[in-house]
Image (tube, rainbow, N blue to C red):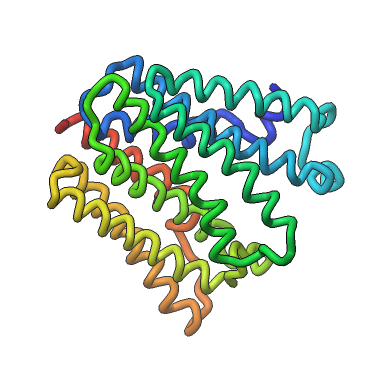
Length: 273
């Protein structure tokens, strides 16, 4: 697995994948150090499993294009997937909700590609539901893990998961700006920018409402809403100027929100919860 991880899931990406887990654990305020470590590691392992499933599904193409290191086999990747999934579920213990959430995410990783192979079922709405509920389940996993040790309302767990999920979806739709060949759910680059703006606006709105209703700590909700709102404005501004002047996006597409939002939530929660 070493060469595969170095090429397809290096250490910086592991850190990015662990950030939402740590942020969710801190956002609830009652997580023990052991639970926080399980949240971060379990979330990272589930994202690694998602990468493995994608690469197993695209194995022949990736091998032909030289995207996989020499010596990496499909059988080895399947074995790595089984080990990764088992470790993630183990980290969900002793919380049955965390184990079920992680198991649902792992199962969903396989369902999406299987449905996508059938031309009659390739409908953007159906594929969106199948593919994008997987990262939502991954983002809810750490809150469910915290609930094993401390009282966490499911409303609060879902709210935290949805806010972090919006950051993930923003990354998905805003990455590879200007690349006409990257068309998730048949969206052209301009459509992806607009979708990213709507997703960030949704994250900001959910965080703000959660703060007002008491489902999320006040300072955490304000910080999360402010960060998501900033990226919403950046994407909306880009959507407005792109058609007129064709200016390329600058600082906001891709990973920044997925790094900054969990980091801000974690820091704010650690200081105030």
